[in-house]
Length: 297
Image 1 (cartoon, rainbow, N blue to C red):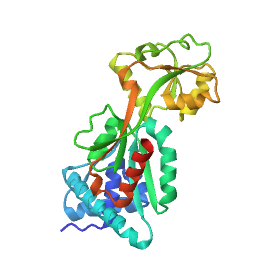
Image 2: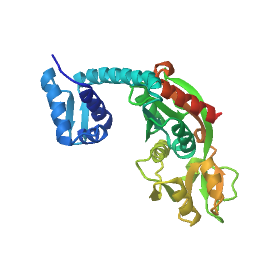
Image 3: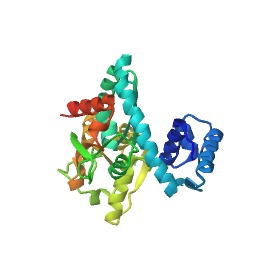
Image 4: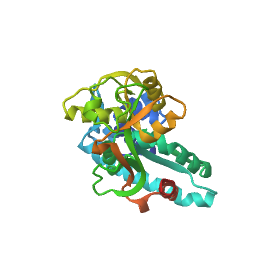
């Protein structure tokens, strides 16, 4: 009989979701050697491999996928139990795993998250930036409790709720030939040098995919870590930037930049909350969803 404990289950979930024993161990707050020993012990106890190990990381075997499904179910039940019982201990205690696209993470989540956490001191929120397609996949398979995605993505059987509205615009330096345009298409933008977020960012990967579909490369001259930095480099004439409209309006209060709306249909961003089952979440997580819905209206 295979013998595992909750630490093993949590570790295994972290390893699979991170795609790496090293990063999984870090998430589980275990030393790499201890994590490797635990994984090996589970495999010996089961009599089958749980992970396929390669140069690019690890992935679950069929046995590993079965264990992962049970681990998520068991750990989810424990988290819900802790949430239900926390009211008797004077407050909610637990963690909420959130995946967000770039727009929501940068412009809408910080203030909403701050207000929620001020009232729920025992709750922690783990947030990771992903593209909308990746978010739907990971919420559906239980990697995350909640996702914030573009309204254009297919969410399948997930429950969804409206969150906020935004759109992408092109930011330009004063005097740029495009500065007086009423709107512009993404294909024409690609004819110019760009300033953008670094390549691993969800937005850059999203825009690169759009550029690939029309057969044009993105001429990223500078890659930065924040929209504010992008706008500052645009102001200095380095290139064009594509940012959320809310970001552009905020940046214009302190920078000499102009904005031109993108006319492509995908530029309009009706952001949605998505989750598997609201009623299955712990009470503190349900309250978080209710809070986001309230501040988003």
